[in-house]
Length: 379
Image (cartoon, rainbow, N blue to C red):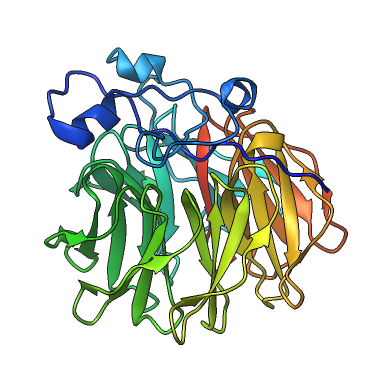
């Protein structure tokens, strides 16, 4: 299998009426382009400092000009708490909404209005509240999943693009791409804390199952920063591949897997020693990764060729790529481990994948620019 190097991941976002100085201000003036544009125009490598921190697979022209991409939507109860069926929640970046999907029937519900350019979403362990990171609004929006209504936005750092919630459900951690920081939010009061400094352009965050450490993938630094969550202090950065765009941790908490979008690889990290292992080569622009509940397989989203590649974690060998929709940007696996769901940003769809056969199902229509997906833990 031949794999070429492409620069994919996510662009920093264009943002209207900003006069910020320095790198953060410059990052906000960049415009996102579609995945197909990157496949056609980008060369074989990406400069370490001048490369975009991330590629967002969206058309950001309307946002850059200051127009709202959607009309105001009502917030009404959907089906989140009306049945035992699992519910997925999809953050639609261009539409400034979240779409719930009843996974028993793969039926989308009415969209929930959130902030501008929702780029990441996480749900509390009790399944009661979702928190959405809005990259252009610089906020996090809570959603009451009993009524599917948005709460008051929480102000965080500049360009929040990733979020993870501690296993005890008490704190959310938000990666702020444009100011190289992580903001902790006390979920009892929805109060943000002082920013935690990490590496350049933090693009992804995952928390170990024991809740003691968060791991932040820094896209332009080619590192992962561990954070001691008892003290909110960062540790020594761990070197990985260029353009780390996503990170997932095995259920036993022993290993993290980091998708390196600029060099088409995945780096395993031994979390007992924070030591990177042998690089797993392959993929075309890996931008997202999820691990099955039995820890047997990782599924890596390859944005440049509209596919998902399975990796056998016992042998670190790659399986046959699974075709999905255009511009795949995110993936989530159902708690029972039977199905993966891939958000396709350009196609405005979610593709289900039967993990017993690695075959794709019928695409589910969602909002414009789906950038993130998560599944309620009670599903």
